[in-house]
Image (cartoon, rainbow, N blue to C red):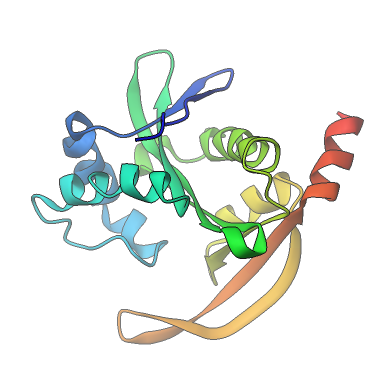
Length: 186
């Protein structure tokens, strides 16, 4: 087994989720408001689902398919959300995904965590492109992507089905050379 990465920012620690985190994952991700902004989080969030999900992380990491971090506040060691990279090694790219528990919205945690994950993706994993998308009608997620320096690539019209309706996805991305150029100016 590979050593799971741990990233630190000014206010946050990004670390592997453990089974001890499962109750917080279930409580935070199980909120209807979080469900409404994500594609793969179930609602209701059934007992045992968090443990099952957490149990997949090390294997995906070991296979080079992805890395999932719990976003933990340094001040009180409380879980506020999760952020991940789903990796396509053959194309040196990854999809950035995240959710933040509703009590922690609008506090800058997602942007702070995502900056650290972009750095990890480009400088440790050697990725060339990191992309993300959000549902139409979720401008807060789009704002995070723009703060990260991601460029708007376009609308994937009716790209996914959520609650029996087709939903547009707004797609953003950043390339390694764009990330490096932005890092030099800050």
